[in-house]
Image (tube, rainbow, N blue to C red):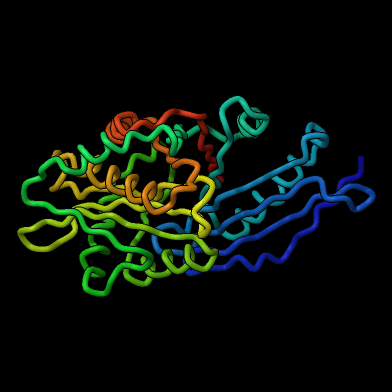
Length: 293
């Protein structure tokens, strides 16, 4: 079968990355696959590219995926990238495809879901009401308030030692511009961002945070984003405390919410235990793959 690979212009350009795209089509110009390559431009990640590749099920094993991959990898090399990362669900066609083409598994992610109907609000409330001496919870919608902005940016360092397996992920540098841009991106697509933070009463600084994004109509499934506690504040149960407050808020504010989704690195047992304690059940496992160029 004749397959044509066409480079596309992708308008998805942000403060921290830009994207390249390719469309695969058959002899009748019917689309049968696509590839997107995100080239990170932020400081500390200029070496990294992230691939998203899809081929229509009926067109697999016909070299379409290989040709899309060749185009994306060639572009990454031309741009001076050191590695390409991508994900595939365990046991999926993509899992076997990547393994056979030089990619290596560098991280295992466990995806979990808490159906709203199965959430134990009484148990969540008990967790929230547990005393945490020296700390109190605060929260906000959308962009961080100006009076908390500086300490919130500092609290993002809680993610610096997030388990990433053997992924050559680089260093993510957070500043106020990036924090505000991330919140603005959520708002632009019509979603709602809610953040819960633990405040250190001794100096008013943020010790940790957790983020949750819900669709603008309050339906479907919400998605947990980052959750982190600064190293000097760990060991006080702040992660579970904040996440329980975030869940209860979402359930109360959005009664039509179907559930909440989260994903956790398999080598992060602490967060896995928190998710288990809050009622999350594993749905599937995904492998992160990396190709060194």
